[in-house]
Image (cartoon, rainbow, N blue to C red; front, side, top):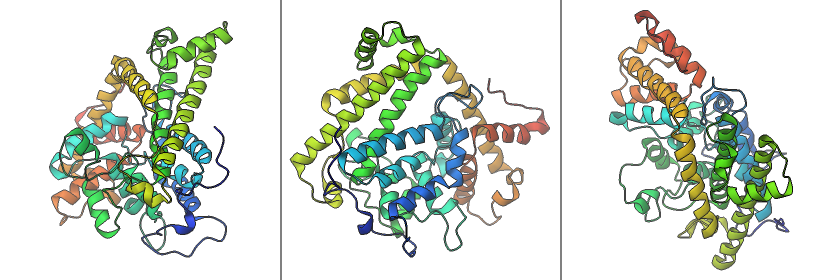
Length: 402
């Protein structure tokens, strides 16, 4: 991957940022997007990611990925790809670091449980929750709630996986229907994030960096955890040929070194393919600004068709052999139970919540439920288990996650 000689004409430019909802004087030493990145790293919600489930819950082992280490790996890949393409590295990194801020404890099982619990009050969506965190729930600055990120960072967080409305939205392409998350709709009424367009190029990079990171680290963690062994990967698309290549070159590698060598090569090939395909698409579409990238009827940043097909096969392998594995599923079910039972108890008996989180007596039911969801979504796995034990101690119940 040879880096671009300079910024691409369609890269986001910090000096042309659309600004922040609350005006602030410019920094004398950092660009607007560097400030975004730094604020995300210093956010309380970002620190909590170190104890939130990626695939394995907190008490399974110390060496598996968490939401925090996953976010750091996504940021590294996004920054490297942005550099190669001449995009703004800081904005790509900021979106990558923030993309999982809204996840509740216990991974996707926790999110499903919270969404089910919130079905009568607008549901729960981790992207919408991330927006709530950076615009409302982080409370540390003297003159505003949230982090007051730039328009480009907020837009990238909300739309990195594509438009939310219109013919190119995921709902339209999948033939599904349903309301947009209330938090996104409410925020867009005061700060238009152009929900019907694609995100800027840096956010698009963050989206594919996310795919690249989780596929590779889940392969690595799956082997490490003994959910499947290296031999089972030899017939899997993309990774199988790479394993054969490494074995020919280093025939006596132990499994750990073999897997690491294969993963680093797989990441390199996925990123190299993304960069090459994005350059090809840019040469064809000829966008001259980030706004023109947003206006396209397809993502500018993409894998080639052959790579996309192989990535799809890798995902299918992981679903069958990791995400639905009995060991992972049982821990996920235990976590979902914690989330659901905490929600029901807090809604029924708000006095069981910490004083600073208790809803006002005159608060409408939807706002009360959303406040409970905010509290639970911010929990780490460990804190959620401790809260469950505290809340249910009086009835002698104790949740076991192992």
